[in-house]
Image 1 (cartoon, rainbow, N blue to C red):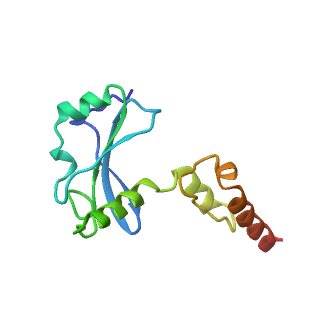
Image 2 (tube, rainbow, N blue to C red):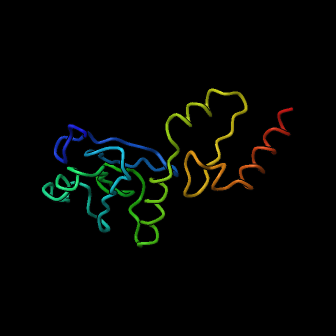
Image 3 (cartoon, one colour):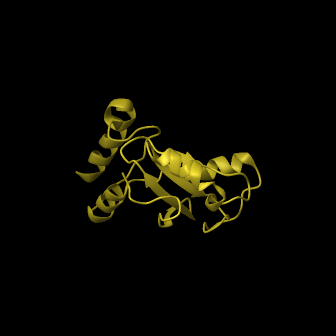
Length: 140
Protein backbone atom coordinates (compact mmCIF):
# COMPACT_ATOMS: atom_id res chain seq x y z
CA UNK A 1 0.00 0.00 0.00
CA UNK A 2 1.33 3.40 -0.96
CA UNK A 3 1.73 5.88 1.85
CA UNK A 4 0.43 8.58 -0.47
CA UNK A 5 -3.13 9.85 -0.68
CA UNK A 6 -5.01 12.06 -3.13
CA UNK A 7 -3.69 15.09 -1.24
CA UNK A 8 -0.05 13.97 -0.90
CA UNK A 9 0.78 11.95 -4.04
CA UNK A 10 3.39 13.76 -6.12
CA UNK A 11 2.45 14.85 -9.60
CA UNK A 12 4.46 12.81 -12.09
CA UNK A 13 4.85 13.11 -15.82
CA UNK A 14 5.12 10.76 -18.77
CA UNK A 15 5.48 11.62 -22.45
CA UNK A 16 3.40 9.83 -25.07
CA UNK A 17 2.68 10.87 -28.66
CA UNK A 18 4.66 14.07 -28.07
CA UNK A 19 2.46 15.15 -25.15
CA UNK A 20 3.67 15.48 -21.56
CA UNK A 21 0.87 14.03 -19.42
CA UNK A 22 0.53 14.76 -15.70
CA UNK A 23 -0.73 12.07 -13.33
CA UNK A 24 -0.73 10.98 -9.69
CA UNK A 25 -0.68 7.37 -8.49
CA UNK A 26 -1.47 6.08 -5.01
CA UNK A 27 -3.26 3.32 -3.17
CA UNK A 28 -2.84 -0.44 -3.08
CA UNK A 29 -0.43 -1.51 -5.80
CA UNK A 30 -0.23 -4.81 -7.59
CA UNK A 31 -3.71 -4.87 -9.07
CA UNK A 32 -5.03 -3.46 -12.31
CA UNK A 33 -5.11 0.32 -11.70
CA UNK A 34 -8.31 2.31 -11.62
CA UNK A 35 -7.81 5.27 -13.97
CA UNK A 36 -9.84 8.38 -13.08
CA UNK A 37 -10.78 10.53 -16.08
CA UNK A 38 -12.50 13.91 -16.10
CA UNK A 39 -14.74 15.81 -18.49
CA UNK A 40 -13.37 18.19 -21.13
CA UNK A 41 -11.71 20.91 -19.05
CA UNK A 42 -11.59 19.43 -15.54
CA UNK A 43 -8.31 18.34 -13.99
CA UNK A 44 -7.32 15.66 -11.51
CA UNK A 45 -7.74 18.05 -8.58
CA UNK A 46 -11.49 18.23 -9.31
CA UNK A 47 -12.01 14.71 -7.94
CA UNK A 48 -13.33 14.51 -4.38
CA UNK A 49 -10.52 13.10 -2.19
CA UNK A 50 -13.04 11.18 -0.08
CA UNK A 51 -13.96 9.23 -3.23
CA UNK A 52 -10.44 8.67 -4.60
CA UNK A 53 -8.95 7.89 -1.16
CA UNK A 54 -11.84 5.50 -0.52
CA UNK A 55 -11.05 3.56 -3.70
CA UNK A 56 -7.32 3.67 -2.88
CA UNK A 57 -7.87 1.62 0.29
CA UNK A 58 -8.25 -1.49 -1.87
CA UNK A 59 -7.09 -0.42 -5.33
CA UNK A 60 -4.28 1.20 -7.26
CA UNK A 61 -5.57 4.66 -8.26
CA UNK A 62 -4.30 6.89 -11.07
CA UNK A 63 -5.55 10.47 -11.45
CA UNK A 64 -4.91 11.84 -14.93
CA UNK A 65 -4.86 15.25 -16.64
CA UNK A 66 -5.69 14.95 -20.33
CA UNK A 67 -3.78 17.00 -22.92
CA UNK A 68 -3.93 20.75 -22.39
CA UNK A 69 -5.53 20.37 -18.95
CA UNK A 70 -3.96 21.16 -15.57
CA UNK A 71 -0.26 20.34 -15.64
CA UNK A 72 -0.37 18.36 -18.92
CA UNK A 73 1.03 19.79 -22.13
CA UNK A 74 -0.49 19.74 -25.58
CA UNK A 75 -3.76 21.13 -26.84
CA UNK A 76 -7.06 20.47 -25.11
CA UNK A 77 -9.10 17.92 -27.08
CA UNK A 78 -12.44 19.20 -28.34
CA UNK A 79 -14.17 15.83 -28.80
CA UNK A 80 -14.55 12.64 -26.79
CA UNK A 81 -12.78 10.78 -29.60
CA UNK A 82 -9.71 13.02 -29.25
CA UNK A 83 -9.82 12.59 -25.47
CA UNK A 84 -9.92 8.83 -25.93
CA UNK A 85 -6.90 8.89 -28.23
CA UNK A 86 -4.91 10.78 -25.58
CA UNK A 87 -5.97 8.38 -22.83
CA UNK A 88 -4.91 5.40 -24.96
CA UNK A 89 -1.53 7.03 -25.65
CA UNK A 90 -1.08 7.58 -21.90
CA UNK A 91 -2.02 3.98 -21.10
CA UNK A 92 0.32 2.28 -23.57
CA UNK A 93 3.56 4.01 -22.69
CA UNK A 94 6.27 1.32 -22.70
CA UNK A 95 7.67 0.32 -19.30
CA UNK A 96 10.80 2.21 -18.26
CA UNK A 97 12.94 -0.94 -18.27
CA UNK A 98 11.95 -1.71 -21.87
CA UNK A 99 12.98 1.79 -22.92
CA UNK A 100 16.32 1.52 -21.10
CA UNK A 101 17.08 -1.81 -22.79
CA UNK A 102 16.11 -0.44 -26.21
CA UNK A 103 18.41 2.57 -25.69
CA UNK A 104 21.42 0.59 -24.43
CA UNK A 105 21.43 -2.46 -26.67
CA UNK A 106 22.98 -1.89 -30.10
CA UNK A 107 20.42 -2.13 -32.89
CA UNK A 108 17.63 -2.89 -30.42
CA UNK A 109 14.02 -2.53 -31.50
CA UNK A 110 11.08 -1.96 -29.18
CA UNK A 111 7.78 -3.33 -30.52
CA UNK A 112 4.56 -2.80 -28.56
CA UNK A 113 1.71 -5.24 -29.14
CA UNK A 114 -1.92 -4.36 -28.31
CA UNK A 115 -3.39 -5.65 -25.03
CA UNK A 116 -0.31 -7.62 -24.03
CA UNK A 117 2.67 -7.41 -21.73
CA UNK A 118 5.10 -10.18 -20.86
CA UNK A 119 3.02 -12.75 -22.74
CA UNK A 120 3.45 -11.20 -26.18
CA UNK A 121 4.98 -14.34 -27.67
CA UNK A 122 1.85 -16.28 -26.63
CA UNK A 123 -0.83 -13.68 -27.30
CA UNK A 124 0.54 -12.60 -30.68
CA UNK A 125 2.69 -15.58 -31.64
CA UNK A 126 2.62 -15.21 -35.45
CA UNK A 127 3.22 -11.45 -35.35
CA UNK A 128 5.97 -11.84 -32.74
CA UNK A 129 7.66 -14.56 -34.84
CA UNK A 130 7.49 -12.37 -37.96
CA UNK A 131 9.05 -9.37 -36.18
CA UNK A 132 11.72 -11.48 -34.45
CA UNK A 133 12.74 -13.14 -37.75
CA UNK A 134 12.90 -9.77 -39.54
CA UNK A 135 15.13 -8.44 -36.76
CA UNK A 136 17.38 -11.52 -36.71
CA UNK A 137 17.67 -11.70 -40.50
CA UNK A 138 18.77 -8.07 -40.63
CA UNK A 139 21.42 -8.58 -37.93
CA UNK A 140 23.32 -11.58 -39.26
